[in-house]
Amino acid sequence: MAFDSGAVDDVPVKDVWEALTGNSKALLIDVRTRSEWAFVGMPDLSGLGSKPILVEWQTFPDNRLNPAFVEQVAEQLAAVGADHSSELFFICRSGGRSLMAARAIAAQGYTHCHNVADGFEGPLDPHRQRGTVAGWKAEGLPWLQG
Image (cartoon, rainbow, N blue to C red; front, side, top):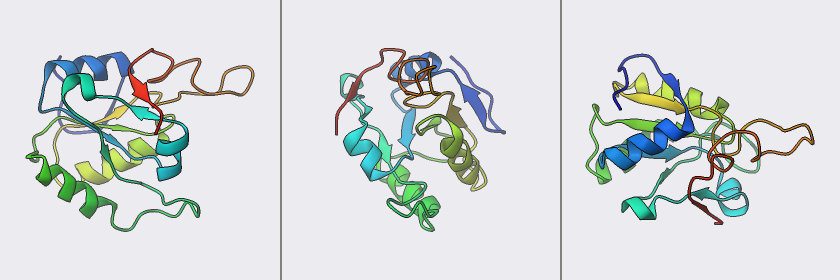
């Protein structure tokens, strides 16, 4: 599956999985907080011989923007051999923080930044719970408890 470079787009979670499966150089960047990774879970890419890059967009517990976010992502991308043309997919709980994070990285010259639509848990369902309507978990994609 080919994606357009330039502006950050929203990509359905199943299409993200297809891209990660079909392109060993595609990367998933999880921008949620440490507590979310530990208590809510995280995408499991071990079946693809990979793992997500983990960098908080906001810090826990104060929810302040991580002032070193761009530098931390760039360092981790360089460590795995990614470059400015690598396919990068950003994920958070429901797609809001990851969109801002993807835009911040795109502004640094990375040309293939995408937002994972509906994120890891998706929107609230009628019972005000996440993980059942849309997103990584609801689509039945592999994940593990931190």
